Length: 189
Figure 1 (tube, helix red, strand yellow):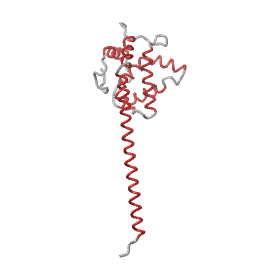
Figure 2 (cartoon, rainbow, N blue to C red):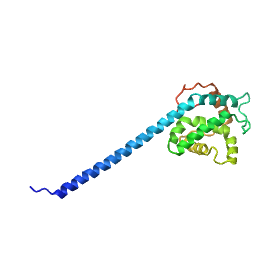
Figure 3 (cartoon, rainbow, N blue to C red):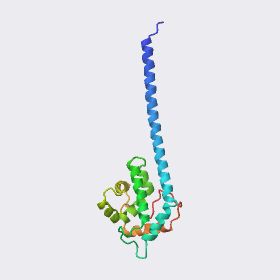
Figure 4 (cartoon, helix red, strand yellow):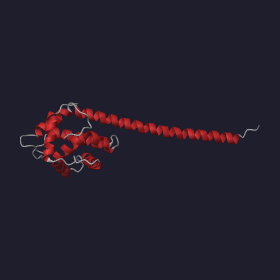
């Protein structure tokens, strides 16, 4: 029996090529899975940073300074407490991470939108004032808020435009909240 070496070579080459394609598909799948895992780890680390001291102390301080017997008063650059800028800077950083693809905007919405919507609404006039002077100030936060609003509307929510009473309730909640007592995806009243 005579062996057709050309056919054996063709079959071997085909098997080798198919093995290479399967390896590439598997590797891409593993890379995608690893990227998702890293995104979740980033999100978990950011939430831990947000929920524990010193950031939780800054948020509580912000709530105490913003909430008085008359509710919340208008903000301007002269009266805005430093702790407000600390929280806004934290959200600006999250916006940058979303922009670069290190975080999923849907995951950020699930985890941080409650705080982002309320604090952004409270500080909106101050942010707009600062952006008139320098349009790059809080540009990642502003873009992220726009994305969060689209997600909120798509999910049928209305938390993206809190009223003054909502903001006051938010700060009352923040003032008395103990770090780590709820799941990050729970929506607040």
